Image 1 (cartoon, rainbow over the protein chains, first blue to last red):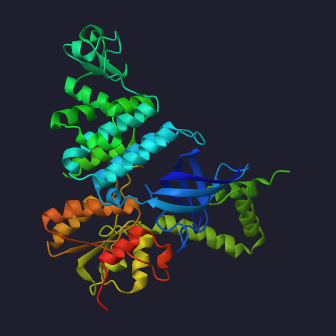
Image 2 (image 1 turned 90 degrees about the vertical axis):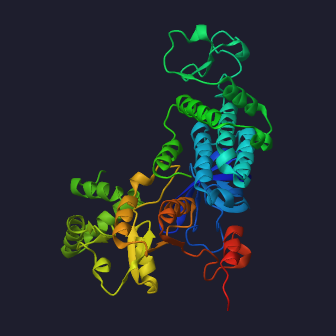
Amino acid sequence: MGHERTAAIVIKTTDFGESDRIVHFFTREFGRVRGVAKGAKRSLRRFIGSLEFPAHVDLRFFEKKTSDLVRVETATLKQQFAGIRGDLEKLSEASLLLEIVAFATGEHEPHRPLFDALVRGLTLIDGLNEWERKGPGVSRLLETRLLSLLGFEPGLAACVGCRKPLDDILHPVFSIARGGVLCDACASGERNLLPVGRDTLRLLAQGIRADIDLLPRFTWSPRTAREAALLIHPFAQAQLGRELRSLRFMEALARTVSP
Amino acid sequence: MAHPGPIARLIEQFQKLPGIGEKTATRLAYHVLKSAPVLAQGLAEAIRRVKEEVVLCRSCWNLTDADPCAICRDDRRDPLQICVVEEPPDLLAIERTGKFRGHFHVLHGALSPLDGIGPDDLHFGELLDRLEKLGKKCEVIVATNLNADGEATALYLARILKPIGYRVTRLAQGIPTGGDLEYVDPLSIAKSLENRREL
């Protein structure tokens, strides 16, 4: 309790009263934190641009024993992610990553590897060129990486039923309910199975362990990128036990416009 | 000791308003009680009328007590300039400048991936219908907020309108009046440099 300082990512900001804002952060040292930024709506000096999703800031706050909300003292911009804010697809993907993190972590439960992976992931998305070609694959790998760090790693390298290695499985299928790939024998009698190519599963499995900066080097075909989305998005929603709103947004966007 | 029934009910109703907690609600309720009857009657009447008389203009979707609204009825305004805003207070903020003589379109929100608010949840379809009737000479001025949701909405409008031939412009972004360069964020300074003008 008292004055604290940490790196943080702004998840969401809502207006509060005439001139204050309530800000949701994912911080490196304290996990999720909610705070009141007094006068943030009107100030021309404090908080300019630093309380906007998905800003990376150096946060100073004061915590009181009597309140769930901390008092935000300063939030100095470290990264503003102009590339994400200026691109609808990048913005949607950044929202999805933050939604996964926000939903799967608790307040005041720090997870430094997750925070570091999130910052590196956002930095990668922010500066990624050729989004149409590389973006979908990179996005699936980042989603899988974050889910894995949160304890929701899909079983990709071997059958989750009998541990038969992926290379020995004739027709691999993915089970959302079982959270991983199944061999022909273990798949019999199972429902809601997704046929998936071995190459898609290998890409995802390698991506979980690879250096985040190297993710754009992975080569995705339109089929493997599509299969990865069909697999990872329902898997994420099943594991988290809720619909991801960013996915709903992406689907609505895809219905109305083409990139 | 509990409040008498009618006061407790009024406190309960005030507490349903945004930003009003129990203490403020209690203070307001006792203020109403102590004031002249005309205040309570005026308040009740104003609340009743706002619910009964305020409707949405079926052209621009602004709040109005007459449909179409006064702005849409005004022949002196330029019908080929449509300023798109998120909410009615944003429209009023632009009207207060006295610099804009075109028409408006109120979306009643902004796209928000995190809240799952997509194109189907806002008045985009009505804007497209309106533009189709007005023709391709229209300029659409996007005046959504300069936060992530407002930017997403602006990007979306550009994405759907530019390919079909409409001119889409965005409110300039830069340093606010009274702003101090030292405290302005890098993105705003970068935009100010991009959009600089001759003196």
